[in-house]
Image (cartoon, rainbow, N blue to C red; front, side):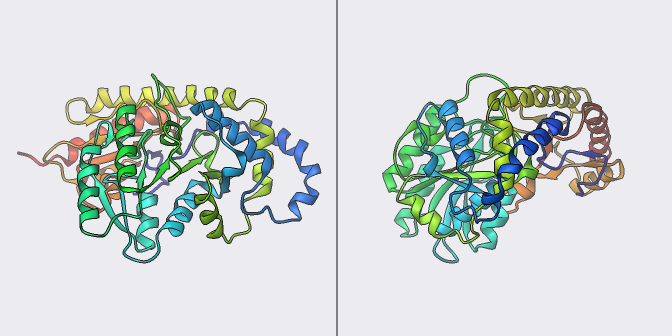
Length: 376
């Protein structure tokens, strides 16, 4: 797949139509003249204090618990957080980590590059199956090779879009606590919410200290600002900071973002989500029109992705070629399977393309799928 095709449903980019270019330029003009000292010194391992305070307020308001700004570590996007945490708690090649069998391909690639053995837990419409998690974790402990941690995308799971219900979140935490297993929660889509009630993050449900929380501004603001963060309490916090060697994150990006988002964070979130919800609904309607007789798909209440099950008897190589010929890009399900299995799914991202591109691109995808069906 390529991300240069005109109907690009492959990349988890956000919505350029709601990007506040003029407002951000004005924020930069206000803040840059006062940054001489800050920009001529290294930011330190925690990063820009003003942004950390804003993010602490964000987490406290969303999750209903107090978050200490000094327990927040700013990172170069959430993927630096994912990698930094893995480097901190995995001591050598061959260490094992438990995670959803289907998960973010960036995490898979990072863990693979670190030599981590990924043990996948099956997922269903409610995310990671905690009954299977308990069985797999028990077996790993009996073998004398427990995992270094459990990594989970409990909220708007990527790629499936699943939302783990509160009861299952409690089961996950209970299972981890029973074995003293660290939990790493990746909540980068936490504010990209459209419908219904949203359960609290795992760390907000239990003050058990063996939890690390990763979040980002990439999905609700802009991935190009490269701002993510890790939340951890001591002593885990000190271990993570000891592993950081890059002198800290981007002060300029953090300062401008704080100046813009500070007065109206939740207003920005509401505006961004309203536009993304329209795109989600447009893609769901287009799928129903053009693929309703062939495929099934998720109906996510948040996040940026729809997970489409392909029909039986479909030649997936032929689909890839037919879609590319029509200018349609998507991600094959195999990229999100921890073992690279050729699962009969594709992931469609709706955040970046405009409404007309979504309608036309899904219609062309439907043509491609019908063309790739193998005659019975």
